[in-house]
Amino acid sequence: MRPIVAFQGESGAFSEKAIEYLVEGPVKLLSCNTFDATTGAVVQGIADLGVIPVENLIAGPVHSALDALAAAPELEQIGEHLLPVRHALLGMPGAALGDIREALSHQMALKQCGRFFAEHPAIKPVEAHDTAGAARLVGIRRDPSVAAIAGAWAAERYGLTVIQDGLQDHSDNFTRFVLVRRKHRAP
Image (cartoon, rainbow, N blue to C red; front, side, top):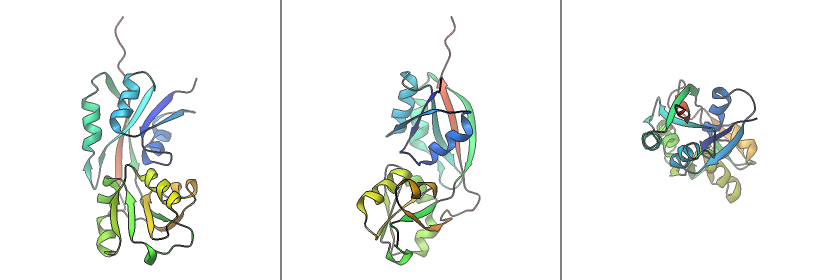
């Protein structure tokens, strides 16, 4: 039976990518809106496992994720993976870098791309609930002046194109993800 794995974000999120490295074999994915919902799904038995980003090399600790884990003492960490994180600017097909006026993404991703925004002051960073969700919104809005910062793999999923890759401030950017499950109870 395939385990159900909860993660924060939408299809195409970095957390979903981390699942490939943390869980062997086929899984069922459970997309959650928040880190609290992710840990809650595991605590309640809706999901067998949860994947949570806890720290990024550039932006530091993911405080809301750490808070969600601290609020769920029923969970235990059973795995960890350092995922290389490359951010790409995703926009509508035909859009060029000079067309972009807003870049939507998760606050942690925006922090990891400070140099890009300094070099492109005409592009306003706009916070979204997650990277893949930002890509989905750009695909829905279909505005060539709006882009998302997400993993390049999200472009195809949401009908976008990669305008520029490697936006992160450091080429060796990593996020540490943990795999959690409910603690086994003694008989």
